[in-house]
Image (cartoon, rainbow, N blue to C red; front, side, top):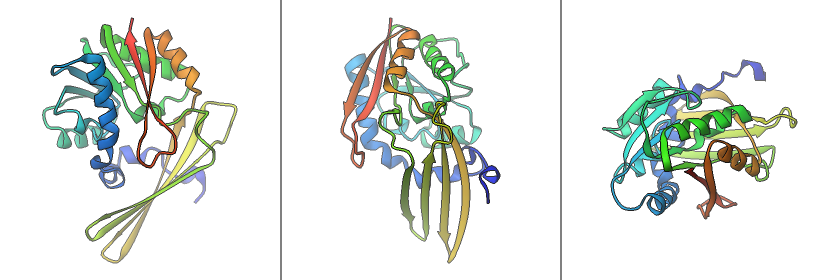
Length: 249
């Protein structure tokens, strides 16, 4: 199989059923605690209303809904279905984080790892502008870059094994950069699903944006935010876990 034969974005379509297996909601508990710390620091006490753009299956969000009333947006019907099952009562909307407008504002807007799918500066600025459009002055925007250009060492290889009773899922992710002159990297993913003595093998391909930290901050400021960088330790991560926090001016 050559590269052009690998389907793109299958994890958000026909392979969405794999998402809770390769990335269980329980894995997000420590990460979400840092989001809660920032939100409590910035919003204060009370049950505030938050909007998550590109919420996916709502796995990180599932650790926040006990404290906040949430609305979510995602492009994928399959992801929104997972999100509704995991987070009953959360309001869902299908839409693109670059262009969606819900006609109201929230106390905070969140973008988790879906921000990785912004492939150039225009995409990134559009997503930040959407966040600003859903906040009043003083509102809070929290975004979580998976990587900065300074911290991702290419090529990068990740593999994980998850056991679920009689089913085992092995996940392999290889990230490479076909054109170092642009702002995009490619990730090839292989999923091996072992069950009842058989192995099902699925392949997937994703394209992610990669930007220096200074670009993230510059574009957030251009969208109307005063920006702070909050760093936290995270188990299994060999670098600080960074949340960029914007206050709408």
